[in-house]
Image (cartoon, rainbow, N blue to C red; front, side, top):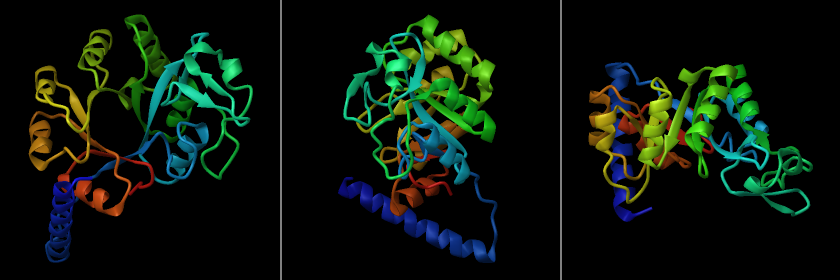
Length: 258
């Protein structure tokens, strides 16, 4: 976190404080923000597992972000990394093993709660449907048109395509999905050092950006065009306060749900 960002966040927090004080005497309608569990409630439970998704729902998150990969036998699973580590320390590359091999043993749990297994994409969607949550879906690896179609056909059959948002750092991936699913909500994933977010306006694509690069001006640019704005990943009170002050639609967090 840079010094300039810290100053910007502190300034925004002070402004938010005085706005809140003013609201006591002159109440204003607050913007409703949807909190997205980053890989589920991953600050407390092992990321991208059914337990993390369930606990996110039960602790007030309005949605969950996940990462999709494909096994060697063509099953879509939730995993940020290309490899998983099993309870006994065995490391397996997702793309080179079957679902049966990948789920033969529990995952090595990075948290203290629960015995957890690799979660399938369909299981994730079923949990999202159970709690009526928003799905932030990022595709990891090389997916062709046929696979992208299959992934979101599964979403439509299992849940609701309008509850799903495809995210990608790669603009071409978003355009591929747009051609296949014209009504699928799309978000450009935008990181520190990235440029060219204005291209979103040409194609009517929303944005999900690292909170450190998001500004009030950027939020206004997107909102003026009827597009949504998300930020990631606010994991401490100062960054959370800053994200709220921006007036965004979504905040991704490992911990915070309100």
